[in-house]
Length: 324
Image 1 (cartoon, rainbow, N blue to C red):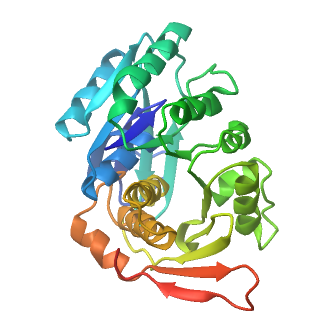
Image 2 (cartoon, rainbow, N blue to C red):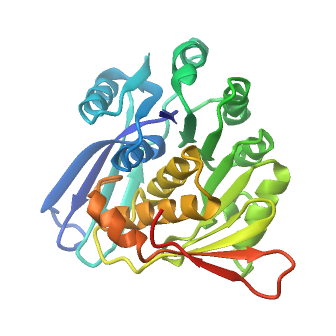
């Protein structure tokens, strides 16, 4: 079972319009409303890939109750701590030319008592039943700077491997807490000084630094350009097919889910990366985070390529991944 921890879930509202017109009333021709947040999207994808999943985190007010009810209806087994603060909403607006606007309400605060309640729920009930953990998304407003790293250490104490997908200053402390894997975007890597945008080897430098800090596997995604990973010994270049579809929103979270499913199953690094890349690309071809048909995933997987670049060799070793 894969446990997905969502510190700041949201109601995701994704709307598609024909085109953006300043000052005009925009009427969606398609609207998708789902429970969202990085870990929630990852949970949806992991389940579609055949994993048993459970979800947890903080969810308050009417919005929080809707999130929990909707997660239960999807079979994502929610066990959330109810908070005094109302859960947030995020908005994604897309047009027919592929342009988008994203509006994310800030993460809401939680009390010390609510935070302690989640820790106890994890220790006593959820972690004993979990085989692998995904910790993804922003933390509640006002959380201590070391809150993400402290949660990773709690998972370690319980003997549970985890994949972390978060951003901001806490990222470096999270890596030092030694998660099994960290997955971030190149933009997030640049934002925390792991690499510079002007550096053509930015993703490579970021993965090496994260592993140096303590991560077992570091992955930096770069949208349609694929991803680069480092496991402490070898680098892995991941190439993905071109996307012509609905929306890239949530594709990084889908990548995290596929990667976690592969790692939890004990697959090779190459196979886990291929699963993640195929899930992320399939997500970009559908509207709404984490919603795609298994057939779409299989079709993309046959086009994903993972290239192993061994240290000390003159050139890379190509390892196309047509199946996992």
